[in-house]
Length: 460
Image (tube, rainbow, N blue to C red; front, side, top):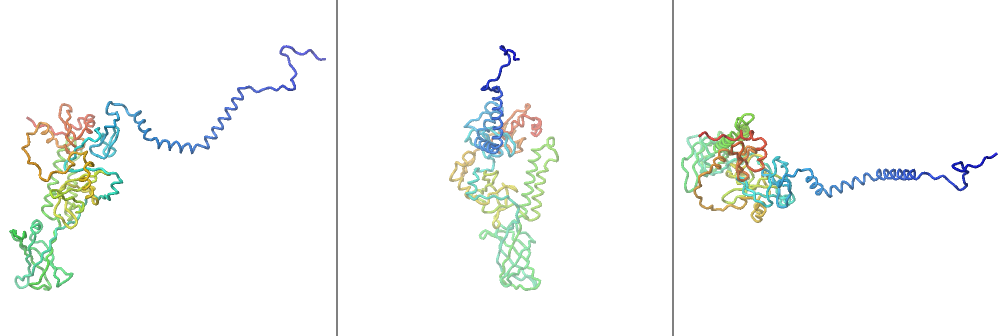
């Protein structure tokens, strides 16, 4: 027996056309989960192309990224941190290092100094010109460099004469030697005698007497040599050629010059590194360098450069040195008498300097034809062949006396004035001079260290 149907909330029979619908939130959740899985699958498949595109975009916009990164990370410090189209930062020690922002030199780690673009920079002493070329121009001009090295150079002279007989068994020969051989020819010097009568054979001879006078007309002096002929092959009256050969390193002038250079270097080293601020014995560097030069001297070798690298203007000789990549300095040098294809170096170069061996004449011509390449440096113009008469110099000021007594920059150990006018600082009440503004921060950060390198003023 059936009961009555439920009216309020009671169970009802399901209609034939009625279905139960899923909740709307469940449908949205399922769709989101489907989209997420599709996105993960797409990301897995496209991760490598996206990475390549990101790297390419970073490379293409690297200048913009770098500028904004520097602007966010570097603190603002007034004018020094502000970038201007009219200013740049450069290194006085490495002139080829330039930057648009304050930084440190990657070569010598000095603080870069701010300057106006196009501002003239003084050249160091001895440098007559300075040029900077791109690698393409260096390759296009065929410029090649090589280190300055020691080489076995000899002074040579060939003189013709006839044999004379002195006594019964001895032969001698008298020759006229050019006056340039005065420093080389000494009593007891060994030489060689050659004759067309004995091709390929030489006889030893020794200098016995040297004339004390030089002939004014021929500019020669007489030398008498004793010929050694144990087999008695030579005959009086035979025409012979005497060949004199003396190593340049054996000359007394070369040894004297080495001693003077060692003395000057040691004095400068002692002045720059007083005992109170120098770890180890003072003058050690100069002693080691002089010992190396003396060792080469004893081996008969001399510091020399190829003749093709020398620019002879008539009143001076100039060579080009590559201080850093693409930067070439014209250096005035003092050279000895040419020996074959080389010149002995008297002053101006040091072992290891990168000398321009090919392209020196092109550099010199470029300097003369295109002065704008070196116009940003004081002293780059050619010096007059006839300098104006000098006037008596005024009395030295107090600062000039202090600079003369200090001599070197306590930070870089470079001579004062080598990078322009010295900069004066007052540190703990004492005057101190540095080579450039880039050294000021180092002095301010550790004043005691650098004051210890400055000689005390003389007692009144």
